[in-house]
Length: 116
Image (cartoon, rainbow, N blue to C red; front, top):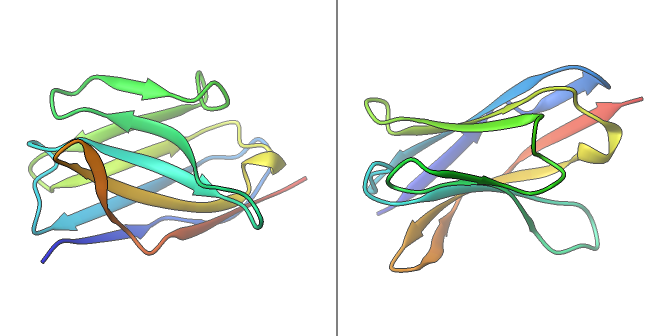
């Protein structure tokens, strides 16, 4: 059984930083890609950042130069370092693991709130 557990969300002032963590069991991030998505009420989930099993990364334009996705294979954990946060980054952030060409597994989400 695959389980993804996110942590690290919270309330931060604009300009601040947060680091989200996603710990996995039942699937290896070293052999499967992973991503961070976010969602606000009434909107679809949008991709924030992704990391392939080979370690290459990709970012949404809104995340480039501010966010960094990384992976610790020993801990089977994916991170999202978020710097220079803006109020528009407020959302529920979800971790996803890739399997057979699709993001098949999702975490429960962690709330990030950025105050102005």
